[in-house]
Each structure stands twice: as C-alpha cells, then as structure tokens.
Image 1 (cartoon, rainbow, N blue to C red):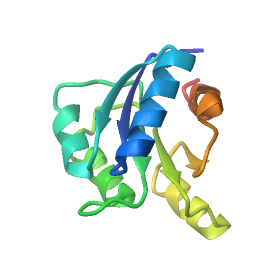
Image 2: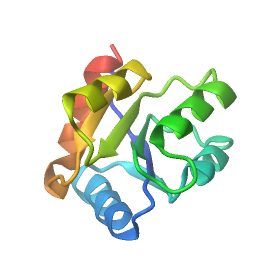
Image 3: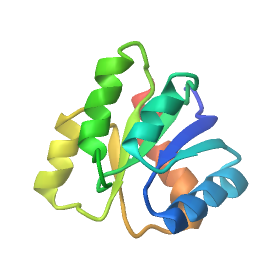
Image 4: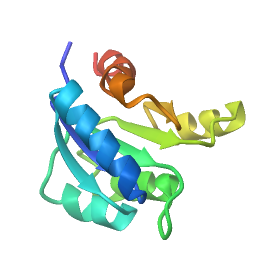
Length: 128
C-alpha cells in the first residue's frame, strides 16, 4: 500500500486552512501546500504533484466540483485522489461528489487531531 506524504489543501476559510495544515503537518507528518481558491489550486498543480488534493466544496468563484472538473481537464495524467471537505453531507450530495470522481468526503466540522487518519482511511485503500 502506498502511503500519502504530500497534500494540496484548498479552502477559502483562513482558519480552517491553518488548523487543517497544522494538524496534517504535526499530527500526520505530511507535507502540506495550501491554496485559498480553486484558481490558486490549479496554478499550484502546474508545478506540484501532491499525493492527495483536499478540496473545500463551497468556495467563491470556482466551487469544489468545478475545481475537480478543471483538474481532470487540465491535468489528465494527475493520478492523485481528490477528497472533498464540506458541511453539505446529505446522502444525495455525498453521492454527487463520489460520482464526480471524489475519493471520499470529510464532514465539516471535523476533529483536527483525527484529520490525518481520516484522510489516510479514505485515500490509502483507494490507491491499491
């Protein structure tokens, strides 16, 4: 099983970005690159090859689904899983995210101390 080492974390909320980055770095021992918009995430993907992308669903400009579609279109060879982080977690919404190609969904609010393990539980089985 391949282990994740690097994450591109995309969220327009500075507090969530900071708490998530600290949890993933200190608890999860992961390399974390951050972006505060879908546009910034796409720009970073031109030079970064993260093991996983964590996308906020609700962002101004491009939302998570639009960003996911742009990633697929612009970076067809990027093989990393994409995980949504969202407060909108009704069953129909979760199915829509998974059908769009997401590897999984992390519910907001989440426990920062559990975030690295939660991310690994979604991503690492999917990489086999």
